[in-house]
Image (cartoon, rainbow over all chains, first blue to last red; front, side, top):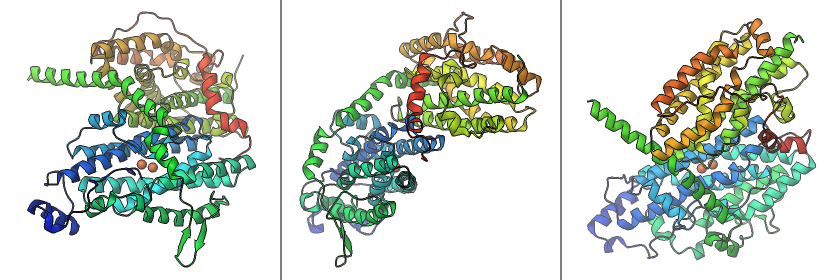
Length: 330
Length: 255
Ligand SMILES: [Fe+2]
Ligand SMILES: [Fe+2]
């Protein structure tokens, strides 16, 4: 997901009996469904894991502005332009809430940016794919925001209070984004032959990358047990992926578009769709830097940051001067 | 040459709408790459306000023209010489300093201008002005504050802002050069003459620049050609090529 490659401690979950009294009290609070707040005691590993997870999530929001930002200047009507701009602005807002949530754990936004720029922290693999036609604005809203919702709705119940509250605000907007994306898809799918072609092409390119958003298959994801015990991960990757396919397949059918998977078929017995796994080699390639847009995305972020340095420094210097003048006047 | 009532009003409305459209478009180019997250969000807000204003002005322009064109037709199917925006607004963003300085020079005009337009004889004009004014006042507050902060910030930010001001200065005066169309709409009580706004604008910018430790350039020269559509810069064609690409390459499609 937006934090698809967060590795947990790598150790198996500690049994309650092996825990220190503090750790045990902490785990019991979580088991009772209590929220952990910034000033509460928490194990170091919990804090570190959350920083990485929330940080990755925040980075995904702001790197995620880029592929959609690519179409703001080419939006085909004034209404679409305003809607897309507002949507991408929402993503910046999500980034802001999440950086604030991470800051409550004792890491600054600047430090997190530094880790993003140096490659020490990742963002979701999905944003390393290019947006090539206007239909991609539909596909991204429908599939990418749709997949984000699958993951984030349960995270509203996550154990860390500030993260859970950020998720509540974010989820409301994400479902709006998804509907907006689906509406673009619908308009294109019912449009001219060229528009229909763009819509199908967008679905072809985004289907498997969207499935990859949930992270590797559970059998290859050894790190999630501790995160689940801590309730900073609420469902397994495969559960969420299945849920996504089950919801999305009928939506594609309604659009009259075909999902690029010959094996996609309703399985009466399981009560789920059967579907093909994405190409995990491609996934690991994208995650390790070889996606179609990794280099450009990171360059764009770094350039924005360094171009903006004089602005941030100027504003800071002015604020300090102002405070000093005020003090001198008193 | 005498201009009929509607032609002059139509021209006037295009000028308002195209200013908002072109500046809104330029501002939207910042989305995702602003100097700091809060600023990214604020710039998107400004762009959204301007796109909203565009829709109102151009919809009314289409109505007044009475040839069945709506706001989207006017935005997406006119060529550069039919655009009526100020030259300053179509210039590339270049850097944040130029972007915010341009916004300020424009806002400092828009606030008194829209305030006056609220009294228009044409109620439709007055209504759009009243709605846009609230947004423009907020824009001015923000752009003036930012110009002051960066002018008063570091040596580097001061010199960037001074350079931005010097670059934009020859474009800043275009808006005040009354022409035949301005005289025509003024005589009907639709709008005041733009030149009547000059004093207020001067005092706003002088006050702000002195707080910002910036030196107002002395030149009185002003480029012209945007608001008549007579001679735009080379940049507008590129902007429109980008903006209009889908509509132009798929005529008749619904989006
Ligand atoms: Fe988001
Ligand atoms: Fe979203």
